[in-house]
Length: 189
Image (cartoon, rainbow, N blue to C red; front, side, top):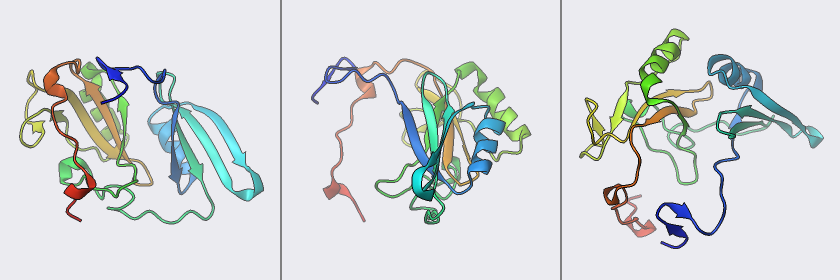
């Protein structure tokens, strides 16, 4: 692989994600969810020229932002194509090539169970706490040394899959990067 030495980018000085831009159906409802429910401060609002819509930015920590476009003539979402139909712990993960499958926010590992309960108390449908590991199905019923991230999934008002993810260890073992990348020829569809 070109440009990577010991997990460090030698090609470009990338400092993280500036912002990820998604599309919503109702900007007010989106602000109510991301600012009101998740507590993310609204940091910039833009009215697009010629009636094209709006572009709003939320601070999601670490100098990163989550942005939303609202277009008055945006096509409706297609569950199972533009995003997974349901939460991963309910057997759904598939979305189309070029789609955004989910957004994961980094949270402290010692608070993930508390955050799950807080979301439930706010009326959010949250999946079970998942212990991601390298087992056959990629999830363990209990925490153990092989678990590299713990997470919970839920959806925003437009059905966008959101994850709170907590790293449990450094990803620095040769075993962490051991799979050959698949090609388009490996696709079944």
